[in-house]
Image (cartoon, rainbow, N blue to C red):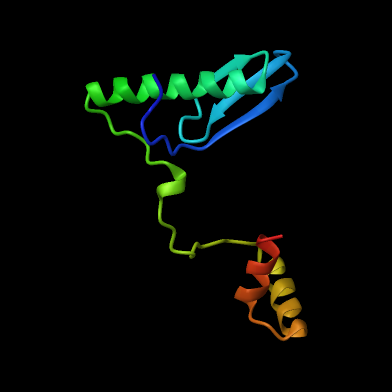
Amino acid sequence: MTLKNDHYTYRVTWSEDDNEYIGLCMEFPSLSWLAESPETALKGIRKVVSDVVTDMKANDETIPEPIACKKYSGKFMLRVPPEVHRKLALQAAEAGVSLNRLASSKLSQ
């Protein structure tokens, strides 16, 4: 049985080490499922997540919130070496934009 309203973030990729597709769930990084096809890998990881969530509920454990459902403020602090800060400030000044706009543009590329 799979979860009702499953909003978790899944990814299927090829595993060269296992010579199979591997299904992953970003909110449960310790879980995975190997299969011969990408479709089966996705179905498998979704089943494993469903079983784990059911078990966590039964044991009153905190269940991870799906990334897709989280609210983000759009703000975060980033520390860089002073030389990088200076270089970015100069680039922003030369481009006639704020340092924030320059950094946001670079991060979104």
